[in-house]
Amino acid sequence: MSSLLMIALLAFAVSLDGLAVGLSYGLRRIYIPWSSALLIATCSALIFLIAMQFGSLIALALSESLAETIGGWIFIVLGGWIVFQLYRQGGEQEEVPQLKEEDGENAWIGVMKKPSTADIDHSGSIVGIEAVFLGVALSLDAFAAGVGAALLLVPPLPISAGIALTSIICLQLGVWLGRSVRGVRWIERWRFLPGLVLIMMGLWKI
Image (cartoon, rainbow, N blue to C red):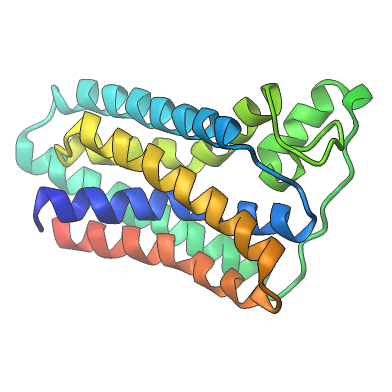
């Protein structure tokens, strides 16, 4: 698998959750300004880059073949976990709890658990610190992928830039679909794709 193809697939797999979150916001008429989308994407890229640096330190203690095998298994386990979580949820419709600013720390914990709750002040848009927390929440699953990517010797700067770009595209596309298109619930089925892509990439490398 070429480096360019791996970068494209990995960026897609890491960022697709943003499409589902954007869709949820669009259906509820919540707006994500481009400046906030850029902030969210920057958070995602930075966290992934930090994870890759951590993975690079681990790789120093391993042979190249062993590092590649471990990186592949990280992708497989992470992809399997994503698929399992979605399968366990089944077809149940997600309930979006109403968080309030006065909820304090509990509100931010709620955003980490459910990124679709990031509009804490109910302003109808995601701005400021809400965008930062949303960016972090969307990046939590990607941390393990970043470690695995480092073990597989994926170039850190190109993949981080790719994740930033695809994050913006997925978020804004999701919001647009939610606002503009009826009957878009079928997109929820595509949430299995990131997990499947990670599994296939892992199998390719072990």
